[in-house]
Amino acid sequence: MFATLAGKALVPVGLAVTGFMVVCCLVLYSVIRDDLHRGEIVHATNLADTILKSTRYAMHKSDRETLATIIRNVGEQKGVDHVRIFNKKGVVTFSAKSGEINRQVDKKAEGCIVCHKEAVPVSNLGTMQQARTFRNPDGMDVMSITAPIYNEPDCSSAACHFHLPGQKVLGTLDIGLSRAELERSLTMLRIQMIIFTMMSLILTVSGVTALLRRNVFLPVQRLRNYVESSAKKNDIPEHPPHLPHDLDIIAASYYNVKMNTFDKKQNSQESVDDCNKGK
Amino acid sequence: MTDMREHQQSADIDKTPDSADKFRQELLKEISRLSRFSTRGILALSLFLVVSILAWWGFFFLPAPETVTALLGKPPSASIISIVLLIYTFSAIILSLSRMAAGIEHCSSFSHVGFLTAFYLFYYFGKSLEENYWAVFGAGITILGVESYRIWSFCAEAITQKQEDLEFVARTGRLPPKEY
Image 1: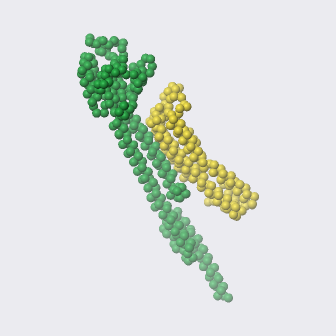
Image 2: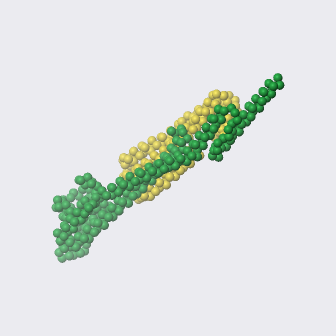
Image 3: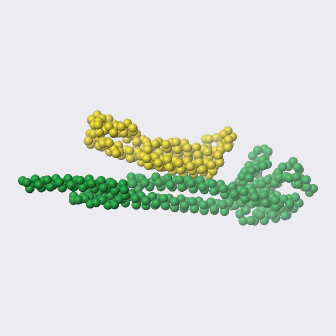
Protein backbone atom coordinates (compact mmCIF):
# COMPACT_ATOMS: atom_id res chain seq x y z
CA MET A 1 0.00 0.00 0.00
CA PHE A 2 2.79 2.45 0.99
CA ALA A 3 4.93 1.48 -2.02
CA THR A 4 2.36 2.40 -4.69
CA LEU A 5 2.01 5.89 -6.10
CA ALA A 6 -1.62 6.01 -4.91
CA GLY A 7 -0.61 5.00 -1.39
CA LYS A 8 2.18 7.57 -1.28
CA ALA A 9 -0.21 10.29 -2.39
CA LEU A 10 -3.21 9.33 -0.26
CA VAL A 11 -1.74 8.23 3.09
CA PRO A 12 -0.29 11.61 4.18
CA VAL A 13 -3.27 13.56 2.84
CA GLY A 14 -5.80 11.23 4.47
CA LEU A 15 -3.90 11.20 7.77
CA ALA A 16 -3.41 14.98 7.89
CA VAL A 17 -6.98 15.86 6.88
CA THR A 18 -8.66 13.27 9.12
CA GLY A 19 -6.43 14.08 12.09
CA PHE A 20 -6.98 17.82 11.80
CA MET A 21 -10.74 17.38 11.38
CA VAL A 22 -10.87 15.12 14.45
CA VAL A 23 -8.88 17.63 16.53
CA CYS A 24 -11.15 20.49 15.35
CA CYS A 25 -14.27 18.47 16.20
CA LEU A 26 -12.91 17.52 19.65
CA VAL A 27 -12.00 21.13 20.47
CA LEU A 28 -15.33 22.39 19.13
CA TYR A 29 -17.22 19.72 21.08
CA SER A 30 -15.36 20.66 24.26
CA VAL A 31 -16.13 24.38 23.76
CA ILE A 32 -19.82 23.71 23.00
CA ARG A 33 -20.14 21.40 26.03
CA ASP A 34 -18.58 24.05 28.29
CA ASP A 35 -20.92 26.70 26.89
CA LEU A 36 -23.99 24.49 27.36
CA HIS A 37 -22.88 23.62 30.90
CA ARG A 38 -22.35 27.30 31.69
CA GLY A 39 -25.78 28.11 30.21
CA GLU A 40 -27.36 25.37 32.30
CA ILE A 41 -25.78 26.80 35.46
CA VAL A 42 -27.02 30.30 34.60
CA HIS A 43 -30.50 28.86 33.94
CA ALA A 44 -30.50 27.00 37.27
CA THR A 45 -29.23 30.08 39.13
CA ASN A 46 -31.98 32.20 37.58
CA LEU A 47 -34.52 29.58 38.56
CA ALA A 48 -33.17 29.55 42.12
CA ASP A 49 -33.38 33.38 42.23
CA THR A 50 -36.95 33.24 40.92
CA ILE A 51 -37.91 30.75 43.63
CA LEU A 52 -36.25 32.86 46.32
CA LYS A 53 -38.04 35.99 45.11
CA SER A 54 -41.37 34.15 44.85
CA THR A 55 -41.05 32.74 48.34
CA ARG A 56 -39.74 35.92 49.94
CA TYR A 57 -43.15 37.31 50.85
CA ALA A 58 -44.29 33.97 52.28
CA MET A 59 -41.08 33.81 54.34
CA HIS A 60 -41.68 37.33 55.68
CA LYS A 61 -45.19 36.41 56.67
CA SER A 62 -43.97 33.04 57.97
CA ASP A 63 -46.64 31.48 55.72
CA ARG A 64 -45.31 27.91 55.73
CA GLU A 65 -48.23 26.47 53.77
CA THR A 66 -47.79 28.85 50.80
CA LEU A 67 -44.03 28.24 50.91
CA ALA A 68 -44.49 24.46 50.89
CA THR A 69 -46.97 24.74 47.98
CA ILE A 70 -44.57 26.85 45.89
CA ILE A 71 -41.71 24.41 46.52
CA ARG A 72 -43.94 21.41 45.72
CA ASN A 73 -45.23 22.99 42.48
CA VAL A 74 -41.74 23.87 41.28
CA GLY A 75 -40.57 20.34 42.11
CA GLU A 76 -43.35 18.86 39.95
CA GLN A 77 -42.05 20.67 36.87
CA LYS A 78 -40.52 18.53 34.13
CA GLY A 79 -36.73 18.35 34.38
CA VAL A 80 -36.58 19.36 38.06
CA ASP A 81 -35.03 16.61 40.18
CA HIS A 82 -35.34 18.20 43.61
CA VAL A 83 -36.07 21.50 45.37
CA ARG A 84 -35.43 21.87 49.09
CA ILE A 85 -34.76 24.56 51.67
CA PHE A 86 -32.40 23.93 54.57
CA ASN A 87 -32.30 25.94 57.74
CA LYS A 88 -29.07 27.15 59.35
CA LYS A 89 -28.55 23.78 61.11
CA GLY A 90 -28.77 21.82 57.85
CA VAL A 91 -32.24 20.41 58.47
CA VAL A 92 -34.57 20.19 55.46
CA THR A 93 -37.50 22.43 56.33
CA PHE A 94 -39.24 22.45 52.91
CA SER A 95 -38.93 19.98 50.07
CA ALA A 96 -40.80 18.91 46.96
CA LYS A 97 -40.38 15.34 48.25
CA SER A 98 -42.25 15.09 51.52
CA GLY A 99 -40.02 12.23 52.76
CA GLU A 100 -37.02 14.55 52.97
CA ILE A 101 -38.58 17.07 55.40
CA ASN A 102 -36.92 17.31 58.84
CA ARG A 103 -33.92 15.25 57.70
CA GLN A 104 -30.49 16.42 58.74
CA VAL A 105 -27.98 16.90 55.95
CA ASP A 106 -24.35 15.93 56.41
CA LYS A 107 -22.17 19.03 55.97
CA LYS A 108 -19.45 16.81 54.52
CA ALA A 109 -21.80 15.63 51.77
CA GLU A 110 -21.19 16.58 48.14
CA GLY A 111 -22.36 20.11 47.50
CA CYS A 112 -22.15 21.12 51.22
CA ILE A 113 -18.40 20.55 51.58
CA VAL A 114 -17.68 23.38 49.09
CA CYS A 115 -18.68 25.96 51.72
CA HIS A 116 -18.14 23.88 54.89
CA LYS A 117 -14.56 22.83 54.18
CA GLU A 118 -13.10 25.23 56.74
CA ALA A 119 -14.18 25.83 60.36
CA VAL A 120 -15.90 29.08 59.33
CA PRO A 121 -18.19 28.34 56.35
CA VAL A 122 -17.89 30.39 53.17
CA SER A 123 -20.87 32.73 52.88
CA ASN A 124 -20.28 34.13 49.37
CA LEU A 125 -19.74 31.92 46.33
CA GLY A 126 -19.62 32.83 42.63
CA THR A 127 -22.34 31.52 40.33
CA MET A 128 -20.11 28.79 38.86
CA GLN A 129 -18.92 27.61 42.29
CA GLN A 130 -22.51 27.17 43.49
CA ALA A 131 -23.09 24.42 40.90
CA ARG A 132 -22.29 20.73 41.29
CA THR A 133 -23.07 17.68 39.18
CA PHE A 134 -23.70 14.20 40.50
CA ARG A 135 -25.71 11.04 39.80
CA ASN A 136 -28.87 10.59 41.88
CA PRO A 137 -29.98 7.19 43.33
CA ASP A 138 -32.14 6.61 40.19
CA GLY A 139 -28.96 6.76 38.07
CA MET A 140 -29.84 10.12 36.51
CA ASP A 141 -27.25 12.88 36.06
CA VAL A 142 -28.25 15.98 38.01
CA MET A 143 -26.87 19.51 38.05
CA SER A 144 -27.56 21.18 41.36
CA ILE A 145 -27.38 24.79 42.54
CA THR A 146 -27.10 25.80 46.16
CA ALA A 147 -28.25 29.38 46.72
CA PRO A 148 -27.87 30.88 50.18
CA ILE A 149 -30.82 32.79 51.67
CA TYR A 150 -29.17 35.91 53.08
CA ASN A 151 -30.36 37.84 56.07
CA GLU A 152 -31.56 41.27 54.95
CA PRO A 153 -32.56 44.31 57.03
CA ASP A 154 -36.26 43.66 56.58
CA CYS A 155 -35.79 40.04 57.75
CA SER A 156 -34.33 41.04 61.11
CA SER A 157 -36.29 44.26 61.64
CA ALA A 158 -39.76 42.85 60.97
CA ALA A 159 -41.97 42.69 64.02
CA CYS A 160 -42.93 39.07 63.48
CA HIS A 161 -39.36 37.81 63.05
CA PHE A 162 -36.61 36.71 65.36
CA HIS A 163 -33.49 36.56 63.09
CA LEU A 164 -30.60 38.43 64.65
CA PRO A 165 -29.01 41.15 62.49
CA GLY A 166 -25.55 39.51 62.83
CA GLN A 167 -26.72 36.24 61.29
CA LYS A 168 -25.53 36.41 57.68
CA VAL A 169 -27.10 33.30 56.14
CA LEU A 170 -30.59 32.18 57.22
CA GLY A 171 -30.77 29.02 55.19
CA THR A 172 -30.10 27.50 51.79
CA LEU A 173 -32.16 26.74 48.73
CA ASP A 174 -31.01 23.62 46.89
CA ILE A 175 -32.39 23.00 43.41
CA GLY A 176 -31.39 20.10 41.14
CA LEU A 177 -32.11 19.93 37.41
CA SER A 178 -31.96 16.79 35.33
CA ARG A 179 -29.10 16.76 32.78
CA ALA A 180 -30.87 14.19 30.58
CA GLU A 181 -31.85 16.76 27.94
CA LEU A 182 -28.36 18.27 27.85
CA GLU A 183 -26.78 14.81 27.57
CA ARG A 184 -29.18 13.97 24.73
CA SER A 185 -28.17 17.16 22.87
CA LEU A 186 -24.48 16.39 23.41
CA THR A 187 -24.93 12.82 22.17
CA MET A 188 -26.68 14.15 19.04
CA LEU A 189 -23.86 16.66 18.54
CA ARG A 190 -21.25 13.88 18.90
CA ILE A 191 -23.02 11.71 16.31
CA GLN A 192 -23.36 14.66 13.90
CA MET A 193 -19.67 15.49 14.28
CA ILE A 194 -18.62 11.88 13.65
CA ILE A 195 -20.81 11.76 10.52
CA PHE A 196 -19.47 15.16 9.37
CA THR A 197 -15.84 14.02 9.88
CA MET A 198 -16.46 10.75 8.03
CA MET A 199 -18.16 12.58 5.13
CA SER A 200 -15.30 15.11 4.90
CA LEU A 201 -12.75 12.31 4.93
CA ILE A 202 -14.58 10.37 2.21
CA LEU A 203 -14.92 13.56 0.12
CA THR A 204 -11.25 14.47 0.52
CA VAL A 205 -9.94 11.01 -0.27
CA SER A 206 -12.37 10.61 -3.18
CA GLY A 207 -11.46 14.06 -4.56
CA VAL A 208 -7.73 13.46 -4.33
CA THR A 209 -8.11 9.95 -5.78
CA ALA A 210 -10.24 11.20 -8.69
CA LEU A 211 -7.82 14.03 -9.51
CA LEU A 212 -4.76 11.78 -9.22
CA ARG A 213 -6.38 9.11 -11.37
CA ARG A 214 -7.47 11.61 -14.02
CA ASN A 215 -4.25 13.64 -14.13
CA VAL A 216 -1.52 11.19 -13.11
CA PHE A 217 -2.36 7.50 -12.95
CA LEU A 218 -4.25 7.15 -16.26
CA PRO A 219 -1.69 9.17 -18.32
CA VAL A 220 1.16 7.18 -16.69
CA GLN A 221 -0.67 3.96 -17.56
CA ARG A 222 -1.10 5.12 -21.19
CA LEU A 223 2.59 6.07 -21.38
CA ARG A 224 3.55 2.68 -19.97
CA ASN A 225 1.29 0.85 -22.48
CA TYR A 226 2.76 2.93 -25.31
CA VAL A 227 6.37 2.22 -24.26
CA GLU A 228 5.70 -1.50 -23.74
CA SER A 229 3.91 -1.94 -27.10
CA SER A 230 6.61 0.08 -28.95
CA ALA A 231 9.39 -1.93 -27.33
CA LYS A 232 7.90 -5.18 -28.65
CA LYS A 233 7.69 -3.96 -32.27
CA ASN A 234 10.66 -3.72 -34.63
CA ASP A 235 9.07 -1.57 -37.36
CA ILE A 236 8.47 2.20 -37.39
CA PRO A 237 7.30 3.28 -33.93
CA GLU A 238 3.81 4.69 -33.59
CA HIS A 239 3.28 8.33 -32.67
CA PRO A 240 2.83 8.73 -28.91
CA PRO A 241 -0.71 9.27 -27.58
CA HIS A 242 -1.78 12.69 -26.37
CA LEU A 243 -0.58 13.02 -22.77
CA PRO A 244 -0.32 15.82 -20.18
CA HIS A 245 2.64 18.15 -20.78
CA ASP A 246 5.43 16.50 -18.72
CA LEU A 247 4.55 12.99 -19.81
CA ASP A 248 4.19 14.20 -23.41
CA ILE A 249 7.84 15.33 -23.37
CA ILE A 250 8.94 11.91 -22.06
CA ALA A 251 6.84 10.12 -24.70
CA ALA A 252 8.23 12.39 -27.46
CA SER A 253 11.82 11.77 -26.25
CA TYR A 254 11.19 8.03 -26.25
CA TYR A 255 9.66 8.27 -29.74
CA ASN A 256 12.70 10.20 -31.03
CA VAL A 257 15.16 7.71 -29.51
CA LYS A 258 13.16 4.84 -30.98
CA MET A 259 13.04 6.56 -34.40
CA ASN A 260 16.80 7.18 -34.35
CA THR A 261 17.46 3.56 -33.45
CA PHE A 262 15.09 2.44 -36.22
CA ASP A 263 16.78 4.75 -38.78
CA LYS A 264 20.23 3.53 -37.79
CA LYS A 265 19.06 -0.06 -38.03
CA GLN A 266 17.51 0.63 -41.43
CA ASN A 267 20.69 2.34 -42.69
CA SER A 268 22.94 -0.45 -41.49
CA GLN A 269 20.58 -3.00 -43.08
CA GLU A 270 20.70 -1.08 -46.37
CA SER A 271 24.53 -0.95 -46.21
CA VAL A 272 24.61 -4.70 -45.62
CA ASP A 273 22.22 -5.22 -48.58
CA ASP A 274 24.35 -2.93 -50.78
CA CYS A 275 27.47 -4.81 -49.81
CA ASN A 276 25.75 -8.11 -50.62
CA LYS A 277 24.59 -6.74 -54.00
CA GLY A 278 28.13 -5.43 -54.75
CA LYS A 279 29.56 -8.88 -54.16
CA MET B 1 25.22 14.38 2.97
CA THR B 2 27.14 17.27 1.41
CA ASP B 3 30.29 15.15 1.31
CA MET B 4 28.35 12.40 -0.45
CA ARG B 5 27.00 14.79 -3.03
CA GLU B 6 30.42 16.26 -3.69
CA HIS B 7 31.75 12.75 -4.01
CA GLN B 8 29.04 11.87 -6.53
CA GLN B 9 29.74 14.99 -8.55
CA SER B 10 33.41 14.11 -8.79
CA ALA B 11 32.55 10.51 -9.63
CA ASP B 12 33.09 10.97 -13.35
CA ILE B 13 36.63 12.20 -12.79
CA ASP B 14 37.80 9.94 -9.96
CA LYS B 15 37.11 6.35 -10.94
CA THR B 16 39.95 4.43 -9.31
CA PRO B 17 39.25 1.14 -7.42
CA ASP B 18 40.32 2.80 -4.15
CA SER B 19 37.77 5.55 -4.46
CA ALA B 20 35.07 2.97 -5.33
CA ASP B 21 35.90 1.08 -2.15
CA LYS B 22 35.83 4.26 -0.11
CA PHE B 23 32.52 5.18 -1.72
CA ARG B 24 31.09 1.74 -0.85
CA GLN B 25 32.14 2.21 2.79
CA GLU B 26 30.50 5.62 2.85
CA LEU B 27 27.33 4.20 1.33
CA LEU B 28 27.16 1.43 3.94
CA LYS B 29 27.66 4.00 6.69
CA GLU B 30 24.96 6.20 5.20
CA ILE B 31 22.52 3.27 4.87
CA SER B 32 23.00 2.34 8.52
CA ARG B 33 22.53 6.01 9.56
CA LEU B 34 19.32 6.24 7.51
CA SER B 35 18.04 2.96 8.99
CA ARG B 36 18.55 4.36 12.48
CA PHE B 37 17.00 7.70 11.49
CA SER B 38 13.90 6.04 10.00
CA THR B 39 12.78 4.88 13.47
CA ARG B 40 12.94 8.41 14.89
CA GLY B 41 9.25 9.14 14.15
CA ILE B 42 8.12 5.91 15.82
CA LEU B 43 10.31 6.64 18.85
CA ALA B 44 8.80 10.12 19.17
CA LEU B 45 5.30 8.62 18.82
CA SER B 46 6.09 6.08 21.57
CA LEU B 47 7.39 8.84 23.85
CA PHE B 48 4.21 10.81 23.20
CA LEU B 49 2.10 7.75 24.11
CA VAL B 50 4.00 7.47 27.42
CA VAL B 51 3.33 11.18 28.14
CA SER B 52 -0.34 10.64 27.17
CA ILE B 53 -0.64 7.72 29.61
CA LEU B 54 0.79 9.94 32.37
CA ALA B 55 -1.70 12.67 31.39
CA TRP B 56 -4.52 10.10 31.46
CA TRP B 57 -3.50 9.27 35.04
CA GLY B 58 -3.72 12.99 35.82
CA PHE B 59 0.04 13.67 36.21
CA PHE B 60 -0.04 12.14 39.70
CA PHE B 61 3.63 13.03 40.32
CA LEU B 62 3.13 16.76 39.67
CA PRO B 63 2.06 19.24 42.36
CA ALA B 64 -1.65 20.17 42.46
CA PRO B 65 -2.68 22.90 39.96
CA GLU B 66 -3.57 25.23 42.87
CA THR B 67 0.00 25.10 44.20
CA VAL B 68 1.49 26.01 40.84
CA THR B 69 -1.09 28.69 40.02
CA ALA B 70 -0.47 30.25 43.44
CA LEU B 71 3.17 30.61 42.43
CA LEU B 72 2.86 31.48 38.75
CA GLY B 73 -0.52 33.19 38.61
CA LYS B 74 -3.74 32.40 36.77
CA PRO B 75 -3.30 30.09 33.73
CA PRO B 76 -4.82 30.99 30.32
CA SER B 77 -8.41 29.86 29.83
CA ALA B 78 -9.13 26.49 28.21
CA SER B 79 -10.60 28.16 25.10
CA ILE B 80 -7.41 30.19 24.54
CA ILE B 81 -5.27 27.04 24.92
CA SER B 82 -7.59 25.24 22.47
CA ILE B 83 -7.24 28.01 19.87
CA VAL B 84 -3.44 27.86 20.21
CA LEU B 85 -3.60 24.06 19.93
CA LEU B 86 -5.56 24.32 16.66
CA ILE B 87 -3.14 26.87 15.19
CA TYR B 88 -0.17 24.73 16.27
CA THR B 89 -1.70 21.55 14.77
CA PHE B 90 -2.44 23.30 11.48
CA SER B 91 1.06 24.82 11.25
CA ALA B 92 2.81 21.57 12.20
CA ILE B 93 0.90 19.58 9.55
CA ILE B 94 1.54 22.19 6.85
CA LEU B 95 5.25 22.31 7.77
CA SER B 96 5.54 18.53 7.72
CA LEU B 97 3.74 18.23 4.36
CA SER B 98 5.95 21.00 2.91
CA ARG B 99 9.08 19.16 4.06
CA MET B 100 7.67 15.97 2.57
CA ALA B 101 7.05 17.72 -0.77
CA ALA B 102 10.52 19.29 -0.80
CA GLY B 103 12.23 16.04 0.29
CA ILE B 104 14.02 17.75 3.18
CA GLU B 105 15.68 15.63 5.84
CA HIS B 106 14.60 17.36 9.04
CA CYS B 107 14.38 15.80 12.48
CA SER B 108 11.75 17.71 14.44
CA SER B 109 9.71 14.86 15.96
CA PHE B 110 10.95 15.15 19.54
CA SER B 111 10.34 18.89 19.67
CA HIS B 112 6.68 18.16 18.79
CA VAL B 113 6.50 15.80 21.79
CA GLY B 114 7.74 18.73 23.89
CA PHE B 115 5.11 21.12 22.50
CA LEU B 116 2.32 18.57 23.01
CA THR B 117 3.47 17.88 26.59
CA ALA B 118 3.30 21.64 27.20
CA PHE B 119 -0.34 21.61 26.01
CA TYR B 120 -1.14 18.75 28.41
CA LEU B 121 0.51 20.72 31.23
CA PHE B 122 -1.33 23.94 30.40
CA TYR B 123 -4.66 22.12 30.42
CA TYR B 124 -3.66 20.35 33.67
CA PHE B 125 -2.79 23.61 35.42
CA GLY B 126 -5.95 25.20 33.97
CA LYS B 127 -7.97 22.26 35.47
CA SER B 128 -9.45 21.35 32.10
CA LEU B 129 -7.28 18.39 31.10
CA GLU B 130 -10.14 15.90 31.41
CA GLU B 131 -12.31 17.80 28.88
CA ASN B 132 -9.47 18.43 26.42
CA TYR B 133 -7.38 15.28 26.74
CA TRP B 134 -8.60 13.72 23.49
CA ALA B 135 -7.99 16.93 21.52
CA VAL B 136 -4.29 16.96 22.49
CA PHE B 137 -4.06 13.19 21.97
CA GLY B 138 -5.62 13.47 18.49
CA ALA B 139 -3.35 16.39 17.58
CA GLY B 140 -0.30 14.41 18.73
CA ILE B 141 -1.22 11.27 16.84
CA THR B 142 -1.87 13.30 13.67
CA ILE B 143 1.28 15.44 13.78
CA LEU B 144 3.60 12.62 14.83
CA GLY B 145 1.87 10.22 12.40
CA VAL B 146 2.50 12.56 9.47
CA GLU B 147 6.07 13.24 10.71
CA SER B 148 6.76 9.51 11.14
CA TYR B 149 5.48 8.82 7.64
CA ARG B 150 7.58 11.68 6.22
CA ILE B 151 10.77 10.47 7.91
CA TRP B 152 10.10 6.83 7.07
CA SER B 153 9.32 7.52 3.38
CA PHE B 154 12.35 9.83 3.06
CA CYS B 155 14.65 7.18 4.57
CA ALA B 156 13.10 4.31 2.57
CA GLU B 157 13.65 6.24 -0.67
CA ALA B 158 17.19 7.24 0.25
CA ILE B 159 18.10 3.69 1.35
CA THR B 160 16.78 2.26 -1.96
CA GLN B 161 18.89 4.80 -3.84
CA LYS B 162 22.01 3.96 -1.81
CA GLN B 163 21.45 0.23 -2.30
CA GLU B 164 21.15 0.74 -6.06
CA ASP B 165 24.44 2.68 -5.96
CA LEU B 166 26.02 -0.14 -3.94
CA GLU B 167 24.85 -2.71 -6.49
CA PHE B 168 26.25 -0.57 -9.30
CA VAL B 169 29.65 -0.33 -7.56
CA ALA B 170 29.67 -4.09 -6.88
CA ARG B 171 28.69 -4.90 -10.49
CA THR B 172 30.96 -2.51 -12.36
CA GLY B 173 33.70 -1.63 -9.87
CA ARG B 174 33.13 2.00 -10.82
CA LEU B 175 31.36 4.86 -9.13
CA PRO B 176 27.72 5.35 -10.18
CA PRO B 177 27.07 8.15 -12.69
CA LYS B 178 25.96 11.54 -11.45
CA GLU B 179 22.22 11.68 -10.72
CA TYR B 180 20.02 14.25 -12.38
